[in-house]
Length: 139
Image 1 (cartoon, rainbow, N blue to C red):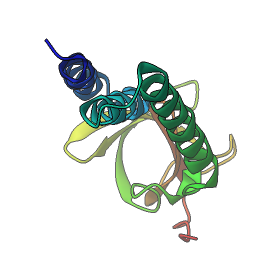
Image 2: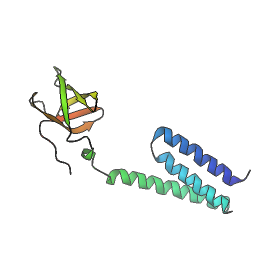
Image 3: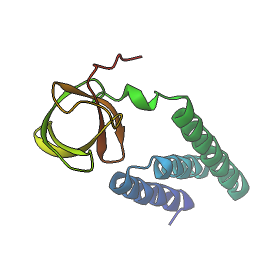
Image 4: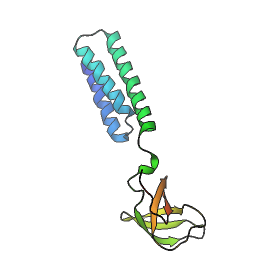
């Protein structure tokens, strides 16, 4: 079997794993393996195949890391600014709210926030919504 077939099979395996994890790093490696396979198909030496593949992994990782930093701010989430219905307030100040057809844990933005009125999502912290009585403005 030709070496380019191994490169492409490895790329397909990594692509399948990427679809299961959703990290995008495996996608970059799969693309790099496909480039190595393309180099092998064009009859480049194994040294060039490995070099091209390694450079593609480095470039892809660099793009992903810089894209995360330079991307949208954390508070530009589409949920920010959406109204929620408070179902119950707990003694510790936390709340249980209805949003998007499900119940969510929520916390007030400050401990002195009133417990009546309309509340909006200010931020999402883990699996908990941060509530505010004022509709946040999107940036």
